[in-house]
Picture 1 (cartoon, rainbow, N blue to C red):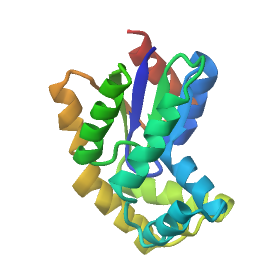
Picture 2: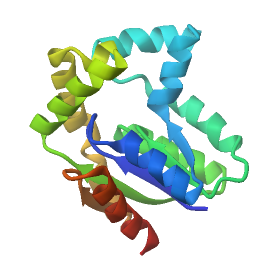
Picture 3: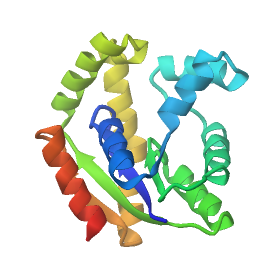
Length: 189
């Protein structure tokens, strides 16, 4: 099994690329964002707590996310591996993921970062907000706060995975197809 982290700021195209990778390689797509949105939609206790946090542009607690991730890993069936989309977001979460993976006798093969500059991110998220009607994708201040939170808390994960020789990077500007081809090259190396 090959477990891969798709990494990048909000709006970089992680979800789009993850879905293409799932189709091509038969990976399980583990999107903490999708899992949280499902909890919110079902108005679970976790969902209600998460909604208030997400609407303010902050990140959901490590404990909530880690527990959702652990359950999904334990329930893997015939998948070729996992594409992690949106987790880990902090150094503490990365360490927790290592702990979870070790407990399941698994490991992360690589982190693939999709690099996109802030102005393009804002443009993409606002456009996505018109389609999805997600409240966190329609407010410029919330978007800027998410980018700032990413830069302060999440971008440092690149160094964490570089130290493990698991960090790879692709240019996130271009067609979906070109970015996908570049990601596939990294996976198949």
